[in-house]
Image (cartoon, rainbow, N blue to C red; front, side):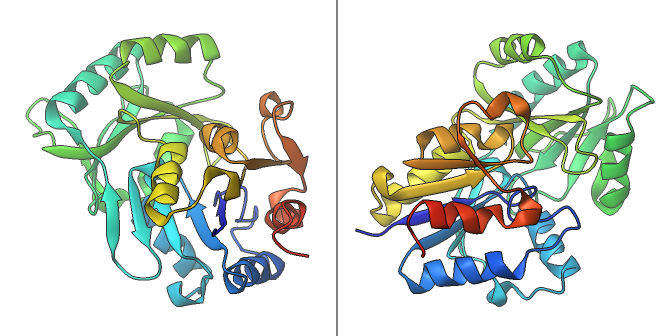
Length: 281
């Protein structure tokens, strides 16, 4: 029976200086050679993921990867290439419900168009003081359209993303999830300033865990043969589900009592996880 190895990208496979260590690349290549299905599960959109590879002067074919789970599970793609095998989206009425809720919370937020056009987004910036939001706006300014009274909402959207300065309180997250019970509400630490909170809302049931579970069934991989490694809150349900779930040391302290902790993203923690799982010597 085949085995599957799933790694997060930012803060896990990717170092703080936005590189992939050669040892971790060799580990992924070794896993593939041993018949292990290799998967990256990232919160990034497909555009953002490819942009990161380009920043590293990395050709997609050079990445030892079988599947990419992107946008926190909203899309799954066979790698390399453009063969999308699964995607999810939120209809216009759902986006209106989410944005009304975000308005009540006073959030700055972005509404991303459906896959494959996720890089395009509408934005609402009312706080006037949100450096992480402004930084992301600057990175993707060519794709941004202000959300105003006369703006037409997309018929289908991948997600609605709120960027909140500082750590978003868990009690407030619980309240938000109650208000948006018909959707998947997933917190994450900003990959940009590593301090702000990103609150991502997807179609109900979308998560890294759900998409990994679907992919495993699709490929005939038993849960007992799945290993996963991550470093943040949006990896937590995936690590819970995997037969072996590993957390890197550069993770929030609140997660460290739940999983086996290994080296950091700068210390080839992905390779350590593969070794500890018994997938490689």
